[in-house]
Length: 233
Image 1 (tube, rainbow, N blue to C red):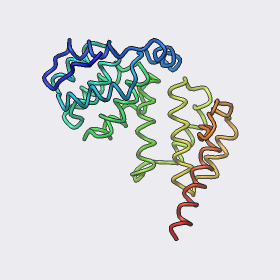
Image 2 (tube, helix red, strand yellow):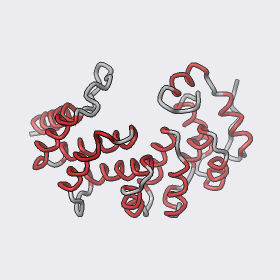
Image 3 (cartoon, rainbow, N blue to C red):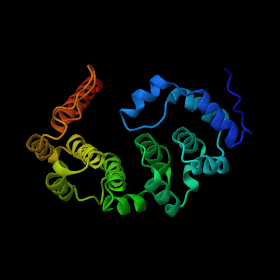
Image 4 (cartoon, rainbow, N blue to C red):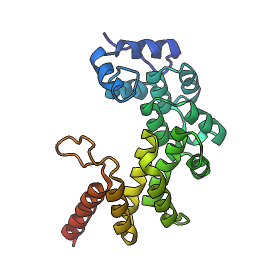
C-alpha cells in the first residue's frame, strides 16, 4: 500500500499513513521496552521527511496522544521555537520511553531554554522528569562542564542510584559513566562507585555492544579514545 503523505497533509492523512505502517511483530518487540506502537522507525522518519517542517501540524499531532503521531510531531516541529513552559508540559506528558527520548534529543537539546529546563528537571520529584534532567546533565558533562559540581554529582549518584526507579537509575548511571569517561581526575572514583553499587552489572548485552555497567563502559570508551589518539599521533 502506497503512503499518501504529502507536505500539505492534515492530521487525518498522517494518522492513516502511520496506521498503515503498523506491524504486529514490531509492536510486540516495542512493547517489551514500554513503547506502545508497531511502526518501523525508519519508515516513520520517511513520513516526517515528506512532511518537512510544519510547527502547526506538529502541535496538532502531539495533541492526539498517539505515540507514532507524537514521534512525527517531534521530527517536524521547530525545536528553537518552543517556550520553556511548552517543553515542560510536553516532557511531563511524554511517558512513553521513545517519545521521552526523542523529545529530549531532537527538541530540548536544540532549544535555547535547555539549561533552564535541565536545572528545573534535575531536582523534580517525578523520577521520569528527573531522568530528563540527569540526561541533559550527562550531555553537559561531556560538552560543557564548567559550572557543574562533579564531586557533588558523584555524591548524589553514590547515595541514590542503587534504589532509584528504572528510568532515573539508567540516567544516573549514564551520568556516572560520562564523568568517568570525560574527566580523568574523577575516573577512579566513578569506577569505584560503579563497582560498589553493581547497577546494571548483569544487564544482557548483545555481542559487539558495550555493557552499560559503568566500570566496563568507562574502560571500553577510554580504551577506544586512547587507541584513536595513538593512531592520530
